[in-house]
Length: 254
Length: 342
Image 1: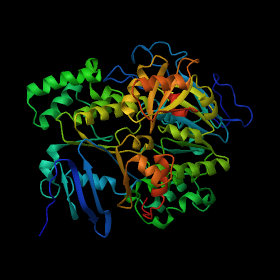
Image 2: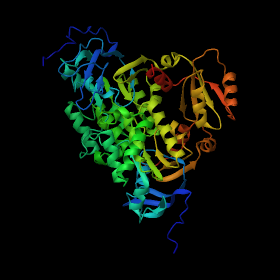
Image 3: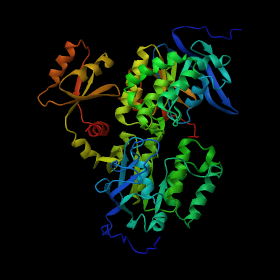
C-alpha cells in the first residue's frame, strides 16, 4: 500500500487530497497542491471557505480526516512535532506578548525554538539594526504602534530560520505605508530561501504573490500566478478574479 | 446628570438650526495617558504632560460635522483614534475636552436621549452568544420599547438573509452572518444615526461589497451613517470621508475632491523585474515617493517637467525590459500616503 508521499526537497508543501470533516460538514474538501521552495504562496478565500482549517492542518495543529500532506518533508498526520519545529507562524490576532519588552519577546521565542543564548544575542542585535528598532529594544511590546508590532512579530516568526512561515492575515488594519514595508520584509525573507504561505483580504497584496490559490466552499477553485489568473478569468485585477470565484459559493453558512 | 428635554444647552456649542447637521464635533480631545508607554493613545493632537499635569488642551481636538442622510467615513489604520471617537459620540466614554452633539443632543448632558436615537455596532461582536438569532433581535427590540414587527421593513433586506437560521445561537454563526445580525440589532429601533465601527474588518472582499450595498439602501431611507474602516478602497463608497492617523484628521472631503487635490503627477509603472524596479524608481531624483500597488508601482513625480519618456529612458539604462508607464488618477490610498507623510 502506497501510503506515503515521496519527499522532494524542492517542494516545501505537498498536499494530496487533504480533507477535514467535522461530523457531516466537510470544511476542507479534497485539496491537492504543492508549494515550491522560496515561493510566496497566497492562500485566498472568502470567510468560511476553509482556509483556517487547512492552515491548521498544515501547521500540525489539526489531524486530517482524509488525504495526506508533507510540510518541510514531514508528515502532517504523524510527525506533527517535527512539522512545528520547521515552521514559523504569525497571525494578526496573536503574535507577541504585550507585557514583555521587545528583547524579552525575542529571547522567549528564540528559546522556545531551541536557539542558544549567544546566538539569540547576536541575532537580536542584527534584527534591531535591520528594523531600525534600537531605541525600542527596552520598550514593552504593548506600547508599540500596530505596524511596529507586526514587523517585529514577523521577524520573530522567522528568527529560527524556518523552512516555511505561515502568515494569517498579517497586515489587517495596518496603515498603508507600513503594510508595504511589511511586504518588503517578506521579500527579504524569501531572498534568504524562506518560503512564505500567506492569507490576506487585501487583493492588491495577492498581486505580490508568486502564485495564488482561491478556496471556495472547501475546495481549491483556482491556482496559478496572478498574471495567469487574470487572463484566465478575463479580469483586470485580482479583486475581479476573486469576486467572480467567490460569488459561486453556495455555502450559506457565510 | 441634568435632564434635558429640548436641544443642546451647552453654552460652548452653537445651537443646531434646521435639519442640516446630524453630528457636530468641536475640538474633541481624549487622551488615555497610557501608563505603560509614552505613546499617545486617544483622539486629537498628542498633548505634552501627564494625567496629573496636562498642558492646556486648546487647539488640540478634532472638529467636523456630518450632514443628515450622509454616509460619512472615518478612514484610518488601527490605533488612529476611530473607536475612541465612536465611543464618545455614543456616550460610552467622556472626552477630556471639547463638545459633541448627535441629532441635536449633547453627548454629556443629553446622553439618555442620544442612546434612544442611535444605533451602534461596535468593532467587536457584542451580541449575546448564547441567545439565538431571533432572541437577540427580540431582546434589542424590547430594550428600545419596540417590536420586530414594528420596524421589520427597515431590516427586512438584511434580516431575511439570516432568517433561515433564526433558531441558531449567535455564537455559532459565521463571521458574515454575525455581521448581518449585529446590523439588524443596531437598526431594530429605527435609529436616526447609525454608528458602525469597522463593520468590515477581517471580512472578505465579496461580503464587504454586499455590506456596502446594504448601507446605500439604509441611506436612502434617511438614516445618517458614520462608519469607520481601515480599507481605503471603501472610502469611495462614502459621501464624505475623514482621513485619520495618530488621533488627527489629515483631511475631510468628498472622495472625489481628495483625489482631485493630490499634489503631484502620478504614474503607474511596471517592468519584468518588479523588485528591482521599486529600488530603481526610488533612486531616481525626480521621484517624490514610490510604492508597490498590486501589479504596478505608483510613482509620484516631483518635477513637473519630467515626461514619461524621460523615465522610460532612465529605466532602460537600468536594464529594465517590457517597461510600461501610464499616467493615472490617484486612489484614496495614494492620497492617504501622501498626506500622512507630510
